[in-house]
Length: 259
Ligand code: SAH
Image (cartoon, rainbow, N blue to C red; front, side, top):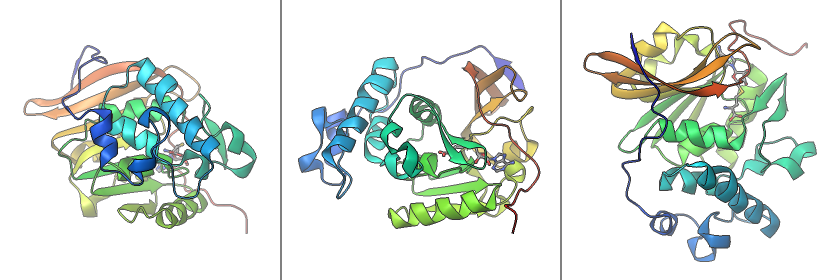
């Protein structure tokens, strides 16, 4: 593996303006403040507004430029992916607990990782670490097929039920150790890992399509972890160091709640 320097500020190739992007989404005629958030059917105006502010201040203002990513972040109802007791923080600028010692990532990190995958033209993405299913829903807004693996069976089942209830029929959840990827549906144009292993799992590299991208935090639990963007080029995998991050650990033991 060759590893080249960090390139976190490249420009996006998509040209659609935000207004063009929102024009093709649900209920665009009644889109929220500054067209930054699309109201989810039946949701309270305050939640649409909170989502619009999240897109504006946490994403656009911090350099997320991809109009499709911003549209997806403004569309997926994050408040339906967080536990009831954290509803008022659903659009806040930090991760939140989702049970079983796990967290739903900070919204900005979800947007950044999604942007780093450069999904335009891609058909299938594999996510390792389904958690609440939120990142999977964002991906399901952007690609025809989303495959996502969660090692905690209860979280996998909850996420699948939630994604189906919201109409994300293109998101498929598997309860398993994501270290091995999902060979049945490989190769994947994009792979995103939302828990931090010590090293890049070789099976994921094998399941990455030519010209595919893999975005993953790597580093020890509780120590320095680095978010990497890997690009599968003719001469091999090239790694771009993006920024220091803190993710929950990538575990290898299948956990289950006591009976
Ligand atoms: N993407 C999630 C947040 C993920 S938190 C969201 O949008 O809500 C990281 C998740 O990775 C946790 O749910 C954890 O259980 C899961 N995980 C950790 N190691 C894993 C492994 N080896 N395979 C699959 N999932 C794993």
